[in-house]
Length: 371
Ligand SMILES: Cc1cc2nc3c(=O)[nH]c(=O)nc-3n(C[C@H](O)[C@H](O)[C@H](O)COP(=O)(O)OP(=O)(O)OC[C@H]3O[C@@H](n4cnc5c(N)ncnc54)[C@H](O)[C@@H]3O)c2cc1C
Image (cartoon, rainbow, N blue to C red; front, side, top):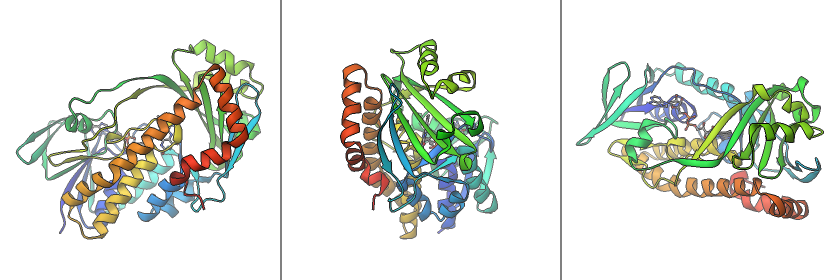
């Protein structure tokens, strides 16, 4: 039986969920300000995320725009030496990078072709609940009452606040600079199809090529207590390889990262959270969007088994909540290790140098789906 679903948010979770529900004949309205969300930089999609996209029949379209990554190289930021190299080419499923814009356009194109998916160009200003009805007030003054609302509006969205009114966010203590630079303007090693993870003191840098190596995506993460912008520049400027990045400091975008306790409530009335709205992740394992695709793949599997929409959403929560919380915990631990300082950072580098490949493969086996 076809049911009507409102999805709030038109980024990866929102568009992916629209595709999954429409595949089973449900009528979708996606509410979001416009079809051009701010999409800067790239994403890594690990094998678990790609497998999820595959169950949505999206894998081939995504692979067309993606760059296959062959290894993760872990390096010492101080010594510019390689500590460990982990092959990604032996995994069961490929590991890729993609420009956010390219992934979004692919999902949007599929949605726009589907007559069951409509878009409402507006922002949700408020959400309220009366008996079994969830009512949305839009910034164009429209009021919508929907039998099912899927909140795919991210970790700062209205649906998360509505479902968990007392959940708070605190400063994570670290911040991130993000930049994309043309490969021709930076040292050639960065455009190899590898993820590079440079571990320093209270900071780390991740890079990977996107758009078939035309551009390289950089993320520099640092403890706010240890650095000012000036000291980041001095670290990069003294570095034999990274000094070229420092010259482009004005092109970096800064993100102040917030963190919150895991949410144990993903549904209120007819509103259900998915993606970052349900389980925002520290970005250190590059799993946020991948975990959103896993929510959607889970929804798709349940719909394929003949579940109604309400039961599908309840089951999805039961299956996905423990999985997503476990990955968020792993990301948090990884970030703490990546930003270690002083003697602990030295010990970390020594351990990675000796047994990095084995430890990391074991820690990430479930996400990387090793052969
Ligand atoms: C530095 C950094 C690097 C990352 N790298 C990776 C990576 O390599 N791999 C990976 O898998 N993940 C990565 N992530 C995580 C990834 O970006 C997120 O997990 C992903 O964007 C979540 O998608 P989403 O659709 O759930 O939410 P969002 O991308 O936050 O989208 C929410 C959407 O909701 C809309 N919206 C918000 N409020 C309203 C409203 N009131 N009304 C209507 N619409 C609304 C917004 O316009 C937006 O389009 C990274 C994150 C960061 C910060």
